Length: 138
Image (cartoon, rainbow, N blue to C red; front, side):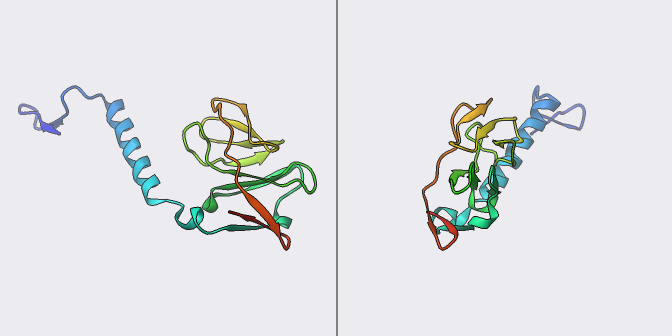
C-alpha cells in the first residue's frame, strides 16, 4: 500500500473496494487450500464400509476426497469429491446426482458425468476393490 500524502489514509492508487475484497478472498482461499491438503489421502488406501453407502444414492468422504455411490444394489462407484469446475468439494448426494454447492454443478451417481453445469468435465473415477465388506480405494 502507498500512503496518500494529503489524507493520512492508505491508498492503493485507484483500487476499488470490490477489488480489494476480491483480492482478500482469493488470498484466504489460497491459504486455506494450502493448509488443508489431503495429506495421506493420496498415498494410503481409504476404507469405506459397504453398509454406509445407500442404494440409489451415495456418501461423501471429504477428508479422503471421495464420493462413493451405489446407483443400484451391489453396483459401487467411486469418484473424486473435487468438482472439476473450480475445485470445490461436492456437498451432497441427492436425487441421483452428486451436487456441488459452490456453483450448482451436478454429476451422475452412475458415471460421474456432468449433468448440470457450469462444470463440463466429469468427476474423476477412482480405482477401488471390495475386501471383506469394505471398499478399499487406492
